[in-house]
Length: 209
Image (cartoon, rainbow, N blue to C red; front, side, top):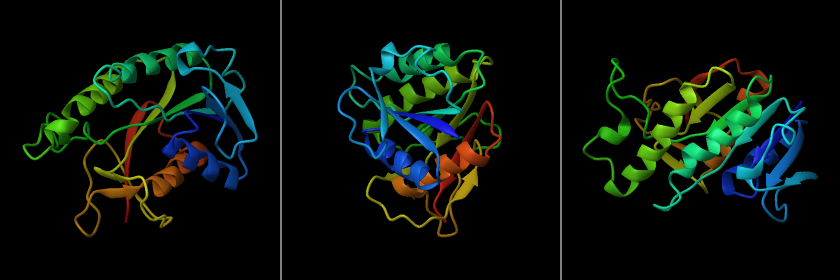
C-alpha cells in the first residue's frame, strides 16, 4: 500500500510516517524543505502547490497540516480545498488529522465541544476554523475523505499505549472519564484506518482507553 503524508516533518506527521513504515507501508513524505521524517522518499513541494499529478498512484494521502496563528487559520479550509481538488474523482483516499472542538455533545448534533462554557477562549478561533473546514469537506462527494478527530487532550509527548477507543461524531470519554490521547496512539489509529477502515466520507474520533 502506497501512502503520502503531507507535512511529514510535523510532530504528528513524523509519528504517522514511523507507524506506517513499521507496518510495511510504502511511505512518501510531502515536505516543503528537507525531509526530516523516517520516509526514504519525499516530494519536496508546498502543500498549496500540489497537483493531481503529484498525488497520482497513492492509495491514501494523509493531511497532517496545522495552522495556529490568526492570520493562518483560514488555511485549514484553503489547504483542504487544494487537496480535494487534486484528488477529485480518484480512488485515492484522503485522511485528515482533525480537531476535537467540532465533536457533538448532544444526540441532536446541535451543540459541540467548542460551544461549552468551559471551552478555553484561546482555542475558539482554531476550533471555529477547523469546524468550517470540516463542514466544507462534508460537501465534497467527489473525494473519498475520512476526518479523524482526536480526544480533547491531544498530547504531543504522551505515552504510546497501543490502545484506543474508536468513536464517531459524538464526544466520547474513556472508562476513567477522560478525553485524552497521545500523538503516538493517534498515529496508530490513523494507520489502522488507512489499512482497515471503511469510513469513507465520515468523521470518526479516537480516545485512549
